[in-house]
Amino acid sequence: MTTEQSIMEVSDSVVANINKFVQNRQAAEKEATHEPLSATALHAYARRLDGTLLQLQDQVRRQEEELRKLRGVRSHGLLHGGDDRWARVQQARQAKRAYESLLKTEDQLPTTDSVLPPLLALEQTGKLIEEGKISVSVTAEKLSGDRDRLRIENANLQDSQAIARRLRERIQRIRSTNERKQEQTPTQVAQEVISEQKKKNKRMARASAELKESLDKFIDDTLAPMLAAEDLGGPTVGDELEVSDATLKAGYTAHGKPKKQKEPEEPDLGSQQRIDQFLRPSTDGSNPTGKRQAAATELHELLDALLEADFSYIDLKRDSAASRFLVRAKVAQFHPRDARRLRLIDFSRSLGV
Image (cartoon, rainbow, N blue to C red; front, side, top):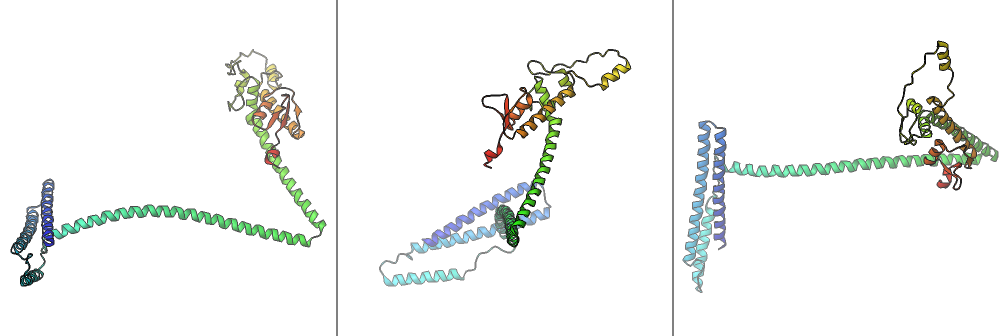
Protein backbone atom coordinates (compact mmCIF):
# COMPACT_ATOMS: atom_id res chain seq x y z
CA MET A 1 0.00 0.00 0.00
CA THR A 2 2.90 2.35 0.72
CA THR A 3 4.48 1.79 -2.70
CA GLU A 4 1.15 2.44 -4.38
CA GLN A 5 0.61 5.70 -2.50
CA SER A 6 4.11 6.94 -3.36
CA ILE A 7 3.55 6.22 -7.05
CA MET A 8 0.23 8.04 -6.94
CA GLU A 9 1.87 11.03 -5.26
CA VAL A 10 4.63 11.12 -7.87
CA SER A 11 2.11 10.93 -10.66
CA ASP A 12 0.01 13.77 -9.25
CA SER A 13 3.06 15.98 -8.76
CA VAL A 14 4.26 15.27 -12.28
CA VAL A 15 0.86 16.13 -13.72
CA ALA A 16 0.79 19.36 -11.69
CA ASN A 17 4.25 20.27 -12.97
CA ILE A 18 3.13 19.60 -16.52
CA ASN A 19 0.11 21.85 -16.11
CA LYS A 20 2.26 24.55 -14.58
CA PHE A 21 4.75 24.20 -17.41
CA VAL A 22 1.96 24.55 -19.98
CA GLN A 23 0.71 27.69 -18.25
CA ASN A 24 4.21 29.16 -18.19
CA ARG A 25 4.56 28.33 -21.86
CA GLN A 26 1.33 30.12 -22.66
CA ALA A 27 2.49 33.15 -20.68
CA ALA A 28 5.80 33.10 -22.53
CA GLU A 29 3.97 32.95 -25.85
CA LYS A 30 1.88 35.98 -24.87
CA GLU A 31 5.01 37.86 -23.92
CA ALA A 32 6.63 36.83 -27.18
CA THR A 33 3.82 38.53 -29.09
CA HIS A 34 5.01 41.88 -27.69
CA GLU A 35 8.64 41.14 -28.54
CA PRO A 36 8.56 38.66 -31.45
CA LEU A 37 11.58 36.45 -32.06
CA SER A 38 12.84 35.05 -35.31
CA ALA A 39 11.06 32.09 -36.88
CA THR A 40 14.08 29.82 -36.46
CA ALA A 41 14.42 30.58 -32.75
CA LEU A 42 10.71 30.07 -32.15
CA HIS A 43 10.72 26.77 -34.02
CA ALA A 44 13.73 25.45 -32.07
CA TYR A 45 12.25 26.54 -28.75
CA ALA A 46 8.87 24.95 -29.54
CA ARG A 47 10.57 21.72 -30.62
CA ARG A 48 12.49 21.52 -27.34
CA LEU A 49 9.34 22.17 -25.32
CA ASP A 50 7.40 19.53 -27.23
CA GLY A 51 10.20 17.01 -26.67
CA THR A 52 10.26 17.70 -22.95
CA LEU A 53 6.47 17.42 -22.73
CA LEU A 54 6.51 14.08 -24.57
CA GLN A 55 9.19 12.74 -22.24
CA LEU A 56 7.20 13.72 -19.20
CA GLN A 57 4.00 12.22 -20.59
CA ASP A 58 5.85 9.00 -21.44
CA GLN A 59 7.18 8.82 -17.90
CA VAL A 60 3.66 9.31 -16.53
CA ARG A 61 2.36 6.48 -18.70
CA ARG A 62 5.11 4.14 -17.53
CA GLN A 63 4.42 4.91 -13.89
CA GLU A 64 0.69 4.38 -14.40
CA GLU A 65 1.44 1.02 -16.06
CA GLU A 66 3.58 -0.03 -13.12
CA LEU A 67 0.80 1.03 -10.79
CA ARG A 68 -1.70 -1.14 -12.67
CA LYS A 69 0.70 -4.09 -12.45
CA LEU A 70 1.01 -3.67 -8.71
CA ARG A 71 -2.75 -3.54 -8.37
CA GLY A 72 -3.04 -6.68 -10.49
CA VAL A 73 -0.51 -8.52 -8.34
CA ARG A 74 -2.49 -7.55 -5.28
CA SER A 75 -5.71 -8.78 -6.84
CA HIS A 76 -4.08 -12.18 -7.62
CA GLY A 77 -3.23 -12.74 -3.98
CA LEU A 78 0.37 -11.54 -3.82
CA LEU A 79 -0.23 -9.76 -0.57
CA HIS A 80 -2.82 -12.23 0.80
CA GLY A 81 -1.37 -15.73 0.90
CA GLY A 82 -3.64 -17.20 3.52
CA ASP A 83 -2.29 -19.83 5.92
CA ASP A 84 -0.39 -21.91 3.33
CA ARG A 85 3.33 -21.64 4.08
CA TRP A 86 4.49 -22.52 0.57
CA ALA A 87 2.10 -19.99 -0.92
CA ARG A 88 3.65 -17.24 1.21
CA VAL A 89 7.14 -18.36 0.12
CA GLN A 90 6.07 -18.20 -3.51
CA GLN A 91 4.65 -14.72 -2.99
CA ALA A 92 7.90 -13.58 -1.38
CA ARG A 93 9.88 -14.93 -4.33
CA GLN A 94 7.60 -13.11 -6.77
CA ALA A 95 8.00 -9.87 -4.82
CA LYS A 96 11.77 -10.36 -4.83
CA ARG A 97 11.84 -10.82 -8.59
CA ALA A 98 9.64 -7.74 -9.02
CA TYR A 99 11.94 -5.57 -6.89
CA GLU A 100 15.03 -6.91 -8.67
CA SER A 101 13.49 -6.04 -12.02
CA LEU A 102 12.76 -2.54 -10.77
CA LEU A 103 16.33 -2.13 -9.56
CA LYS A 104 17.69 -3.09 -12.97
CA THR A 105 15.64 -0.45 -14.75
CA GLU A 106 17.38 2.82 -15.58
CA ASP A 107 16.36 6.11 -14.01
CA GLN A 108 14.08 8.14 -16.22
CA LEU A 109 15.97 11.42 -16.37
CA PRO A 110 15.45 14.27 -18.84
CA THR A 111 17.59 14.27 -21.95
CA THR A 112 20.48 16.65 -22.47
CA ASP A 113 18.48 18.94 -24.75
CA SER A 114 15.54 19.19 -22.32
CA VAL A 115 14.62 22.60 -20.88
CA LEU A 116 13.45 21.08 -17.60
CA PRO A 117 16.88 21.12 -15.85
CA PRO A 118 17.50 24.79 -16.72
CA LEU A 119 14.03 25.70 -15.46
CA LEU A 120 14.59 23.87 -12.18
CA ALA A 121 18.04 25.41 -11.83
CA LEU A 122 16.61 28.86 -12.56
CA GLU A 123 13.92 28.44 -9.90
CA GLN A 124 16.44 27.26 -7.31
CA THR A 125 18.83 30.07 -8.23
CA GLY A 126 16.05 32.63 -7.77
CA LYS A 127 15.32 31.28 -4.30
CA LEU A 128 18.99 31.43 -3.38
CA ILE A 129 19.24 35.02 -4.66
CA GLU A 130 16.24 36.13 -2.57
CA GLU A 131 17.64 34.43 0.52
CA GLY A 132 21.00 36.06 -0.17
CA LYS A 133 19.40 39.51 -0.41
CA ILE A 134 17.62 39.03 2.91
CA SER A 135 20.83 37.81 4.51
CA VAL A 136 22.75 40.81 3.13
CA SER A 137 20.19 43.31 4.50
CA VAL A 138 20.19 41.66 7.94
CA THR A 139 23.98 41.56 7.98
CA ALA A 140 24.18 45.23 6.93
CA GLU A 141 21.88 46.30 9.77
CA LYS A 142 23.85 44.24 12.26
CA LEU A 143 27.12 45.63 10.93
CA SER A 144 25.84 49.21 11.27
CA GLY A 145 24.82 48.59 14.87
CA ASP A 146 28.17 46.96 15.63
CA ARG A 147 30.00 49.94 14.14
CA ASP A 148 27.99 52.36 16.29
CA ARG A 149 28.75 50.34 19.41
CA LEU A 150 32.41 50.16 18.44
CA ARG A 151 32.55 53.93 17.99
CA ILE A 152 30.94 54.47 21.39
CA GLU A 153 33.29 52.01 23.04
CA ASN A 154 36.30 53.70 21.41
CA ALA A 155 35.13 57.08 22.71
CA ASN A 156 34.66 55.65 26.20
CA LEU A 157 38.08 54.05 26.03
CA GLN A 158 39.71 57.33 25.03
CA ASP A 159 37.93 59.15 27.86
CA SER A 160 39.03 56.50 30.35
CA GLN A 161 42.60 56.68 29.13
CA ALA A 162 42.59 60.49 29.34
CA ILE A 163 41.18 60.39 32.88
CA ALA A 164 43.74 57.80 33.93
CA ARG A 165 46.56 59.86 32.39
CA ARG A 166 45.41 63.02 34.17
CA LEU A 167 45.12 61.17 37.46
CA ARG A 168 48.63 59.80 37.12
CA GLU A 169 49.95 63.28 36.36
CA ARG A 170 48.04 64.70 39.32
CA ILE A 171 49.40 62.00 41.64
CA GLN A 172 52.91 62.64 40.39
CA ARG A 173 52.58 66.39 40.99
CA ILE A 174 51.24 65.81 44.51
CA ARG A 175 54.10 63.46 45.29
CA SER A 176 56.65 65.92 43.94
CA THR A 177 55.07 68.74 45.94
CA ASN A 178 55.06 66.70 49.14
CA GLU A 179 58.67 65.69 48.65
CA ARG A 180 59.67 69.29 48.01
CA LYS A 181 57.75 70.52 51.06
CA GLN A 182 59.40 67.93 53.25
CA GLU A 183 62.77 69.30 52.24
CA GLN A 184 61.73 72.93 52.88
CA THR A 185 61.68 74.79 56.16
CA PRO A 186 58.39 76.15 57.57
CA THR A 187 59.43 79.66 56.55
CA GLN A 188 60.00 78.61 52.96
CA VAL A 189 56.65 76.81 52.87
CA ALA A 190 54.88 79.91 54.21
CA GLN A 191 56.58 82.14 51.65
CA GLU A 192 55.60 79.78 48.85
CA VAL A 193 51.98 79.76 50.01
CA ILE A 194 51.95 83.56 50.22
CA SER A 195 53.45 83.84 46.74
CA GLU A 196 50.84 81.49 45.28
CA GLN A 197 48.07 83.42 47.00
CA LYS A 198 49.36 86.70 45.59
CA LYS A 199 49.42 85.23 42.10
CA LYS A 200 45.89 83.98 42.57
CA ASN A 201 44.77 87.41 43.79
CA LYS A 202 46.33 89.04 40.75
CA ARG A 203 44.57 86.64 38.43
CA MET A 204 41.27 87.25 40.18
CA ALA A 205 41.78 91.02 40.07
CA ARG A 206 42.57 90.87 36.36
CA ALA A 207 39.54 88.68 35.69
CA SER A 208 37.35 91.00 37.78
CA ALA A 209 38.56 94.02 35.84
CA GLU A 210 37.77 92.31 32.55
CA LEU A 211 34.31 91.35 33.78
CA LYS A 212 33.71 94.90 35.04
CA GLU A 213 34.72 96.31 31.67
CA SER A 214 32.40 93.90 29.84
CA LEU A 215 29.56 94.74 32.23
CA ASP A 216 30.05 98.49 31.75
CA LYS A 217 30.03 98.07 27.98
CA PHE A 218 26.87 95.97 28.16
CA ILE A 219 25.16 98.58 30.32
CA ASP A 220 26.17 101.51 28.10
CA ASP A 221 25.37 99.84 24.78
CA THR A 222 22.38 97.62 25.56
CA LEU A 223 20.74 98.26 28.92
CA ALA A 224 20.84 102.07 29.02
CA PRO A 225 18.21 102.68 26.26
CA MET A 226 15.85 100.09 27.76
CA LEU A 227 16.26 101.52 31.27
CA ALA A 228 15.59 105.02 29.96
CA ALA A 229 12.49 103.77 28.13
CA GLU A 230 11.13 102.12 31.30
CA ASP A 231 11.77 105.29 33.31
CA LEU A 232 9.76 107.23 30.70
CA GLY A 233 6.79 104.88 31.15
CA GLY A 234 7.66 102.59 28.25
CA PRO A 235 8.06 98.80 28.12
CA THR A 236 9.84 96.86 30.83
CA VAL A 237 13.51 96.14 30.29
CA GLY A 238 13.76 93.10 28.05
CA ASP A 239 10.35 93.44 26.39
CA GLU A 240 11.75 95.61 23.61
CA LEU A 241 15.41 94.94 22.89
CA GLU A 242 16.08 97.91 20.62
CA VAL A 243 14.99 101.42 21.59
CA SER A 244 15.96 104.23 19.24
CA ASP A 245 16.90 107.78 20.18
CA ALA A 246 13.89 109.06 18.27
CA THR A 247 11.58 106.94 20.43
CA LEU A 248 13.22 108.22 23.62
CA LYS A 249 12.88 111.78 22.38
CA ALA A 250 9.19 111.37 21.54
CA GLY A 251 8.39 109.58 24.80
CA TYR A 252 5.59 107.14 25.63
CA THR A 253 1.87 107.37 26.22
CA ALA A 254 0.08 106.49 29.44
CA HIS A 255 -0.43 102.96 28.06
CA GLY A 256 3.28 102.46 27.41
CA LYS A 257 3.06 102.93 23.65
CA PRO A 258 5.59 105.08 21.77
CA LYS A 259 4.31 108.51 20.86
CA LYS A 260 4.22 109.63 17.28
CA GLN A 261 7.38 111.39 16.33
CA LYS A 262 6.96 115.01 15.30
CA GLU A 263 9.49 117.05 13.44
CA PRO A 264 9.24 120.63 14.77
CA GLU A 265 10.02 123.45 12.43
CA GLU A 266 13.33 125.04 13.30
CA PRO A 267 13.25 128.85 13.44
CA ASP A 268 15.58 130.73 11.20
CA LEU A 269 18.34 131.58 13.66
CA GLY A 270 21.61 133.14 12.96
CA SER A 271 24.61 131.02 12.15
CA GLN A 272 26.35 131.83 15.44
CA GLN A 273 23.22 130.92 17.44
CA ARG A 274 22.90 127.59 15.62
CA ILE A 275 26.58 126.82 16.30
CA ASP A 276 26.18 127.66 19.98
CA GLN A 277 23.06 125.51 20.21
CA PHE A 278 24.85 122.61 18.54
CA LEU A 279 27.94 122.80 20.74
CA ARG A 280 26.23 123.58 24.05
CA PRO A 281 24.78 120.42 25.72
CA SER A 282 21.07 120.39 26.28
CA THR A 283 19.96 120.85 29.86
CA ASP A 284 16.33 119.81 29.39
CA GLY A 285 15.01 116.26 29.43
CA SER A 286 14.32 116.06 25.70
CA ASN A 287 17.85 114.97 24.74
CA PRO A 288 17.82 111.17 24.13
CA THR A 289 21.58 110.90 24.57
CA GLY A 290 21.31 112.50 27.98
CA LYS A 291 18.54 110.08 28.95
CA ARG A 292 20.65 107.08 28.00
CA GLN A 293 23.67 108.43 29.83
CA ALA A 294 21.61 109.23 32.92
CA ALA A 295 20.17 105.70 33.01
CA ALA A 296 23.61 104.15 32.53
CA THR A 297 25.17 106.37 35.20
CA GLU A 298 22.41 105.52 37.66
CA LEU A 299 22.92 101.77 37.15
CA HIS A 300 26.71 102.09 37.46
CA GLU A 301 26.40 104.03 40.70
CA LEU A 302 23.84 101.58 42.07
CA LEU A 303 26.05 98.57 41.32
CA ASP A 304 29.10 100.26 42.84
CA ALA A 305 27.14 101.09 45.99
CA LEU A 306 25.86 97.52 46.30
CA LEU A 307 29.35 96.07 45.85
CA GLU A 308 30.79 98.42 48.46
CA ALA A 309 27.99 97.54 50.92
CA ASP A 310 29.02 93.85 50.79
CA PHE A 311 25.56 92.24 51.08
CA SER A 312 24.30 94.99 53.41
CA TYR A 313 21.23 97.08 52.62
CA ILE A 314 21.61 100.49 51.02
CA ASP A 315 19.05 103.29 50.84
CA LEU A 316 17.63 104.08 47.41
CA LYS A 317 17.13 107.66 46.36
CA ARG A 318 14.08 106.75 44.28
CA ASP A 319 12.22 103.85 42.74
CA SER A 320 14.06 103.52 39.41
CA ALA A 321 14.09 101.11 36.50
CA ALA A 322 17.67 100.16 37.42
CA SER A 323 16.72 98.88 40.88
CA ARG A 324 13.69 96.99 39.54
CA PHE A 325 15.83 95.40 36.82
CA LEU A 326 18.40 94.15 39.35
CA VAL A 327 15.62 92.59 41.43
CA ARG A 328 14.04 90.90 38.38
CA ALA A 329 17.46 89.61 37.33
CA LYS A 330 17.90 87.96 40.77
CA VAL A 331 21.00 90.05 41.41
CA ALA A 332 19.57 92.09 44.29
CA GLN A 333 16.56 92.00 46.60
CA PHE A 334 14.44 94.55 48.43
CA HIS A 335 14.11 94.67 52.18
CA PRO A 336 11.11 92.56 53.28
CA ARG A 337 9.49 95.54 55.04
CA ASP A 338 11.04 98.52 53.24
CA ALA A 339 11.11 98.69 49.44
CA ARG A 340 13.44 101.72 49.61
CA ARG A 341 16.31 99.51 50.77
CA LEU A 342 18.23 97.14 48.52
CA ARG A 343 21.11 94.68 48.84
CA LEU A 344 22.94 92.06 46.76
CA ILE A 345 21.89 88.42 46.96
CA ASP A 346 24.47 86.27 48.75
CA PHE A 347 25.08 83.52 46.20
CA SER A 348 27.80 81.91 48.31
CA ARG A 349 25.25 81.04 50.99
CA SER A 350 23.09 79.10 48.52
CA LEU A 351 26.19 77.26 47.27
CA GLY A 352 27.25 76.37 50.80
CA VAL A 353 30.57 78.24 50.57
